Length: 102
Image (cartoon, rainbow, N blue to C red):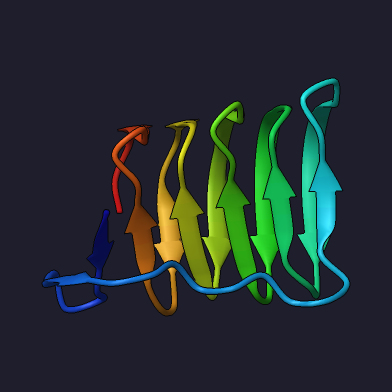
């Protein structure tokens, strides 16, 4: 797992921990539209649209996201088609598939 830093460097280490109050989309969930969240979100389902999050966006191993993501930090284990705007860290796991700009 590599941790992409805002300055373009890579740091080895653990992903940011999800906080209490995390919104969770399980594997059966499908959503189309714009998400505006103050707390973290974990996506294991299918999302199409945009995500604006004040904390951590995690795309789980079964997550399939087609969206522009803005967040404090982003953790990807699944698939993302779209651009990431992170104010902090971007963590890509081995299983991550990203088609877009970071």
